[in-house]
Every structure is written in C-alpha cells, then in structure tokens.
Image 1 (spheres, helix red, strand yellow):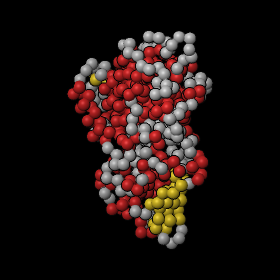
Image 2 (tube, rainbow, N blue to C red):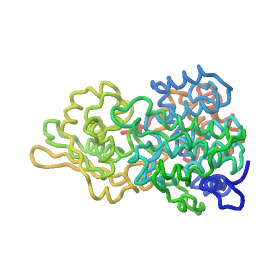
Image 3 (cartoon, rainbow, N blue to C red):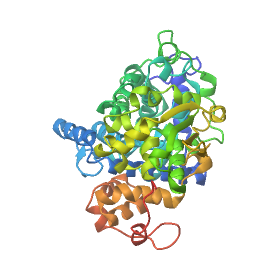
Image 4 (tube, rainbow, N blue to C red):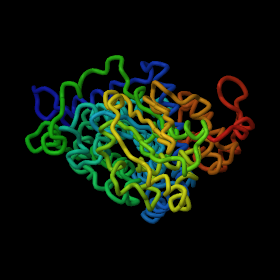
Length: 495
C-alpha cells in the first residue's frame, strides 16, 4: 500500500492525521494525562453498566448475539463475546445511553469517550496492553476533538450533521493502530470510514427515538470495520478531506487543515473534556446544579413561585433542548434533553439521577406545575464564556416580589470545576455495583487505576462481567482509593 496518494507530493490531510495518531507514545505522556485517561475509562465504564437493563442495551446485545461471529471481544455486563465490530456497537451504545459520559464543546460538541468502545474491543481482541489502550485512547481524543475545533462552517450541527460524524475518523484511526497497522494503512482506514459514516442530526431532533443512543456505537463499529478493510488491503480516497468532492467541502463546509494537522506539542485535548455528574444533556448540567443548590437552600412552596427563569448561553438556546416541544417530554430521551424538565426535577428532588427520569416523574403533577412556569433566557456572561464553558443559572421569582438565584458559570465536571475523586468513585459505584456486585466493582476500579501495569487486555476485560471481579477482588486499603465498605455509606453522587 503506498505511503501517500502519489510519490513526491506532500501528505494528504488524512496521512498527516494518521501520523499524529502514531506519534502519541505512552512513554511520553505526562502523568496528568495518564491519570485523566484512567478517570475517563472509569467514568465511561460506569455509565455503560448503568445502561445494561435499558431497552437500547438489550436490543443491541440481542442483535449482536443473533448475528454471531468470531468471539473476539467482551460485551460489557454479560461477559459474552462477539466480533470486535459488534462488541464496539454494543458497548458503545451502552456507554452512551444514559447520556452521562464525558463531553467537549467547540464548533461542535463531542462525547469522546465513545472512542473507548473501539479501543477496548480491538485492544482485547489483539491482546494489547493497558499502555497501548491508554495511548490509543489519548490519540483518538486528540483527532476527534481537533475536528470539533477546526471543522465545520459554521458547524456540522448547523449543516445538518450529528456530531458523531467527527468520531468516524478517530475510531477508525484508533482501531487501525491497535490492529497493528502503520500510518499508511491508518490513513486508508480513516478514508474508508469517512466515505460512509456521516450521521444526520435528525436523530437527535424532535421527539428523540431510541436510535440516538446508538450513534457513537454505530460509528465505532464502522470504524473497526474500516480498519479491518484497510488491514486486508482495501484502499480509500486519501484526499477525502481536501478533494473537490470531499468531506471538507461537502460535509463540513470548511476545515482549517493547518490547525487540524499541527504537531502535537504539549497540549492534550483529553484534559479539556468535562465529566458529567448527571445523566442529562451537557448544556443542562449547570442549570441542574443551580437548581439543586436552590433546593438545598430551601425551596419555597410551589404556590409561592410565580416564574422560573433559566439563564443559558445563546448557543444552548438554539439547540433542540430549548425547543418548546421539550417542555413536557413523554420519554426519557426527550426528558434528558430538556432544559425545562431537567431544571424542574432538580428543583423538586434536589437530585438528577436515574430515578428522576422514571416514567412516574415525567407525568408528575408537581413537575408539570413547575414546567409551566419556566422561561429560558440568554445570559450574556455565559454567552461570552462559550464554548469554553456551558454555564447556567436558575432564578426563582416569587409572588411577593423577591427572588432567589444561583449561578454556575462553570458546570460541575468542567476542568475548572472538576469532580473530586470521591465524586467520580461514587458515580462509578452507583452504576457498577448493581451489575458486578460491590466487590466486583472494586476489583474493576482497581484494575483501571493499574491499567498501565496490564500486559494483556483480555485479562482486564474478564472483570467487565459479574463473577470474575468478585472472585479476584483485591481491595486497596491505602492511598486515595476508597474501600468498598466506605463507599456503601456515602451519599449518591447526584445530590
């Protein structure tokens, strides 16, 4: 396979990106990047365990098992095995379903932890090390988030494309790297993926259907398949990005190729991602926290509240989560993507976890009473901070003329308002204990912290299902790792 589209010419954009993917070396990663990568593995796997009983989770698992195929990679929760592409689909859908995995805002948003589904499946199949997984994950985050920064006129979303479209390149690149291919085949893997996996934004507009939860998982599956095709010699259009009929002109509208392909330098975009404390759309995280703080301070009786003003950056007000049709959501997907509902339920319950999106909550008369009083308004301070932060505020205007307000310029989980290790641990155990048993969850958590000591990921993935984790538990008693008997006594992370 040729190293470039033609001899004696400059590399194409995809070739340059492939070079960046292979330039990430575990040995050269700063300690804070390695720690942040482990934190995101912990958080993302926790989100996946929380979705095991979901309708989407059960459906994609059934589909994978019905299709059969080589037993290459583990399905999270059940421990069953499927092909690497189908495992990426199943696990990618699980980790995304709750809408509680990490995020990033720029021209377009991203949920870059979706790349974990690919690196976990291919890493296990190819029996790579934990160090290989971390390096591939850091590289995938970098490619994915650079596209969020430098592609789109004005953005993919406003051109009708879902943000999972950017992930097609990072997933294919990470898969190719872990399969063991060089930069040349990695570029072809990205070219193949980018030719086919552009995702329409309609899947997250209007009344949200179940397929929304599979967007990143589907792209992960296709990324693995693209890498396999390239591995076996299939070529793609290496000038896919810059060609006249290519991705930049016809999907993105415009791409800053120079910035996209700049050398790595000392900046790692993984460190700039945010971790969610709540299973809701990222732009609702700040108003949720503001509403919870107002609840903690003492919520007035519903009859005393005349109006509830939710203040947001201008960008957020132009998203489907602000649409009037989301005021009274009928299903969980729409409720999680409703500024109205997320604010109302957080005010009433002082929490925003799984229980707050149960069907009885959606139909609750007290919730509906508050929903009718909510108004969404732009806040210029938050608009000025965007996209560096998705701030939010909630103001309760009372019938006696007074008001109560809480402002949250940086949402919890933002790099400037990071979740503590305790909060991360509690969130993980809230989801994982039910699936693995508390002892099994501790075993997996400890294995994640020790990923750089793992020489064979097939040993690590044994801990993704109940049984092995409990049998092999070696709970730590020192350092910052929280013992399982202490976890049980802690309050839930969402309150």
